[in-house]
Amino acid sequence: MSELGIVYALLGAAVAVLLSGTGSAIGVGIAGQAASGVVTEDPSKFAKVLIIQLLPGTQGLYGLLIGFITLSKIGVLGGGLADLSVQTGLLILAACLPIGVVGLLSAIAQGKTAAAAIGIVAKKPDQFGKAMLFPAMVETYAILALLISFLAVSGIQV
Image (tube, rainbow, N blue to C red; front, side, top):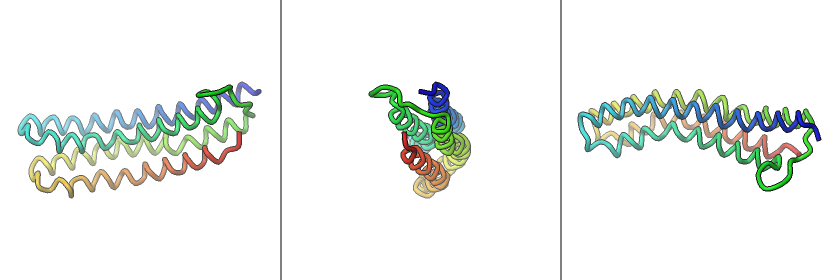
């Protein structure tokens, strides 16, 4: 067994979780600042702005999912460690990069978009559905990155 192969694969799982989780924390924080301001002025809008604030948190969940799939694939969860070559470990690392990098960047962008959408709800609460569409559009790219990371990790022979 190549210890270096396992290290690269574990690094891939860590990158997926750490980067997407960091992006989600930043994005949810950005949206939370806007939501707090709205709730200060009108507490009745709490539920609507909370839903919008939570949207950037999905990227962290996507990274966590890829992290769990990766750990399971290499045997860290529920079994003995797989015998990974350096090349296979690097392939797994590369497969985890899309959700890590896109998760980081899209969650931050989604947090900014969610903050703007919260501004819409602050002035026109009846436009909640339309306001939700703006941050949801950013979600599309996080889902695409999740899909490619999932397919890539799943397709690597261990």
